[in-house]
Image (cartoon, rainbow, N blue to C red; front, side):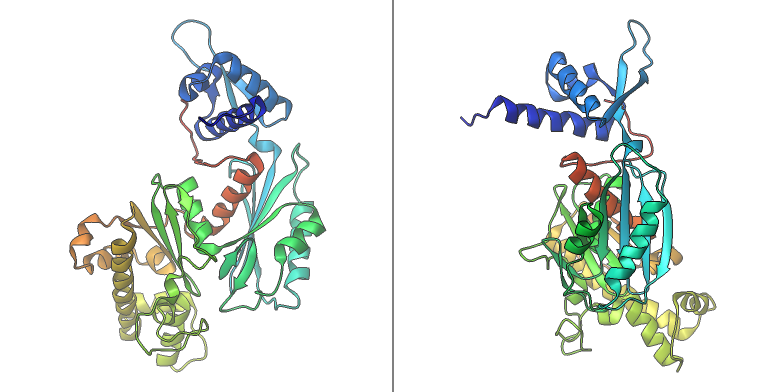
Length: 387
C-alpha cells in the first residue's frame, strides 16, 4: 500500500478542489464535498486557503427551494491576465484575456521578422501589450507562443517556413519580463483550444491547414507529442512517392499539395501571376473558375486519403479540420467524408473547427492557466453548470 504525508494528501486534495471549482463552478462547499468524496470540513479548510491566496472567491448564494441557501465558490478569474501569441508565416497575432478565457482583446501585426530581429520585435509587442493591461492581483500569469513547426521541451526544434529554430524564445522572454513563457506547436495548441473551449470529447485529432499541415493529438485528454515532439507531423507524411521536394528533406509530402500555401502557389502558377491570396482564390472558386475548382477537388482527395489513414491509426472520437477552405466552403467537410470509401467511414465524426482563427491562441490560454493553477484538466465554456 502506497502512503503519503499529510502535506502531500492536502496538496492533492487542494488541486482537486481547485480543479473542480474551475471546471464546474460556481459551486457550493457541499456540492464539492459530494462530488469529490471529501468531508465538508476538509472542503471548508481548503477553500479558506484558496481564498487567502486570492484564487477563489465567494460570489453569492445558490437558488434553492427550501432551507439555507449555500454560498457559491468560483475562480477569481478577473485577477489574472493571460497573453497568447500565434507566430504564423504572415502575422504575429496577440490575444489577452482573463483566467477564464473571457474579456479577450486581439491585435495582429504583419510578420516581417527574421531570425536576427524576431526577439526585439516580440519584446516590443509584449511591452506594449503589458502596458495596456490593468493592474490585477496575480498580474500576468503566463505567456504562450504558438510556433508553426516542431517544438520539444519548450524549445523550437524545426520550422520549415521561417528560421527561428536556433532561438531560445522561452528563456530570453521569460528572463526579460520575469513571466513564465511556454512555447508549443500550433496544431497541439489548436487541439487543446478546441477541447477546452468547444468540443466535449477526450480523444480528438485536430488537423490545422495553414502554410503547412499540422496535427494535434489528444488521447484520453492528454496531449501526445511523441518522443522528440515530432508526433502529429501530418503534413510531412508522404502522399506522392518521389514527388515535390519539401523543406523537411522528403519528397511528396502532404503539405506540398494540400496546404493553403501550396494551393495558392499552384493557382498563381496556373494564372501566371507572382502572388495569389486566399481572398482572390475564393472569388475565383465562387465564379466557378476551372483551376480553382480543380485545386479544391485535389484538396478533398488528399484530405480524404490522410483522414482515412488517421481513422485506421487512431480511431478518435472526433476529427476537427481547421482551414480557410472549411470556413469559406461549407459543404467541403461533407465532400471529404463522402470520399472516404472504407468501412471506417461510418465511424468518422469529422467537423470543422469551432474556434477557427482563435484555436491556437485559446490553446495557449489553456496551457498558461493549467500551469498557473497547477491543475491537470481544464474545461471552460460561457456557462459552466454547477455540480
